Structures are given as structure tokens and as C-alpha cells.
Image (cartoon, rainbow, N blue to C red; front, side, top):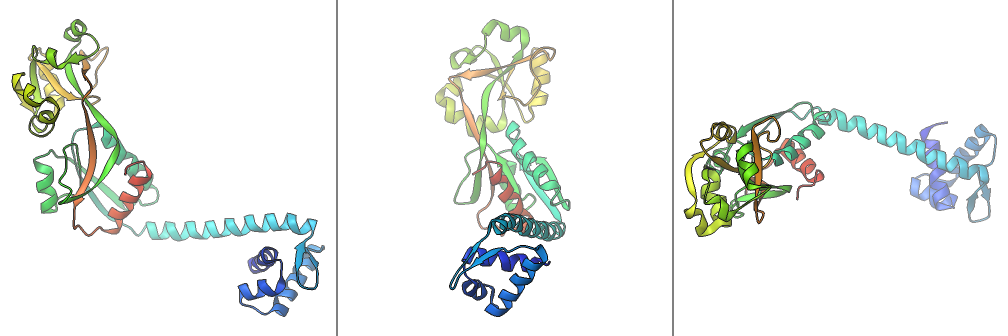
Length: 294
């Protein structure tokens, strides 16, 4: 028995006609009839009830039809898997990302992990970028994609929206946060010595706080929240930040209090508008969309 016999048999069952099946298979009806007859002899039972212009499956034929479909599907899947695997292993190169500090970078990490087994030849370079450096690095071609939290210029960049968002709040010493409660209002922000992220000061906070930003007691600014956290621990001030960027809670000396009403920053992956994508870039974007980005 050969796979060809199974294909001839399943097509005949679908068409319920030797004539139509032969036409679909691009063989003559006598050739098809002979192959079906030999298959029945090999199995030791009839597979079809033959009428003058049609055929229908016997009980044994229906059982064999279900099994034959599974065998053919498994064969096709196995062949395609090997083809894809061989092709995918030929994809080699580096994907370069400029990333803002955000826990939503996990979607890039999740996508890379999903691709790692299929495309072991792809390497990933992750560097820290902000609203100042990301556009410059994209235009110079030193990065392929930028993960940003500022509003991108859609005339210059293509983009995909990440499914998550970042929540703004204040990083404080535990003993100071206990006095305030579980959240901090904009009015309460005015009484705190604040360190603010440079990117947020120019691009994001003015959108949310407007003129109230000028009334804040700003004692410093920073690029990396880990560094600001050290100043916070020493009592210098509180840091405006996204949640989840540094460890907080019992044993850390720090707490994160969200601003109320809640202030959110969405994240996007952007790339040059007229950028010609390489195969590995296309593969990455396709998988990122599977992970929920749009």
C-alpha cells in the first residue's frame, strides 16, 4: 500500500464517483478502478458499494476513510514541518532594538522566546533608548525597531501597539508611603520633592498634568529609574516612574504608589516608514502580532 493509494481512495470517497475522482486526480478511470480494486484485495474487504454512476462507502470503507485522512494529514504536516525547519534554520542575523524602560518589553522577550527554537540563527541586541535617542538611532540605521512610550509621528514611522500599558506613580520609601496610603493624588504630588524622568518631563507628563507640572517641586531628573531609586532610599526625594521597573514591597525599603486618577502610557514598536524589511524582521513582526500586538 502506498500513500498514492490512500489519496486515490479518499478522493473517490469525496467525489462519490470514479469518473469525477479520476478527473480530479488527472488519471484515467480504468487506472483508478484498478488501484482501488487492488487496495480492496490487500485489505481483504470491499471499500465501496458500486452503482452504475456512483459509489458509496461501505462500513469498512468509512472506518478506513477516517484513518486514511489522518495518515495523509500527518504525512503532510510532517513533511511541511521538516521543510519549515530547514528553511527557518537558514534565517540568520541580528535584530536590534532600542527600548524605553517598561515592563511591556516582556512582549518583545515573549516573541523572541517563541521564535528561538524555530530560528536559532537569529540574535537579539537590546539597548536602552529614550525619546531623544530612539528617532536618531532609527534614522541612522543603528537599530531596526524602537519600543517607545511617546506618541510617534505616523508620517515617519510604521507602528504596532503593544497590548499592555504602563501606569505612572511615585516611588517612595516605605515609611513615607505609609503616611500617604495606597495612592497619591496630583495635589499631594505638590508637597513631595520629586525626581522625574527626562523623557517623561518633555514628552509624557505635560500631556497628562498640563500646567500643574509647573507647580511640582522638582529636585532632579534621571534617565534610569534604578539610579533614582538609590536616591529615594537615601531620603533625597521621590521618583516619578512607571510601575514594575524596580523591586518594591516588603524587604526592599520602597513602595510604589499609583497616581489617582490613573495615568497610563501605551507602548508601541516603531520602525522607519519606508524601511524595507528583511526576512527576519518580517518573521519577528508576524510573531509579535500573534502575541497580541496590533
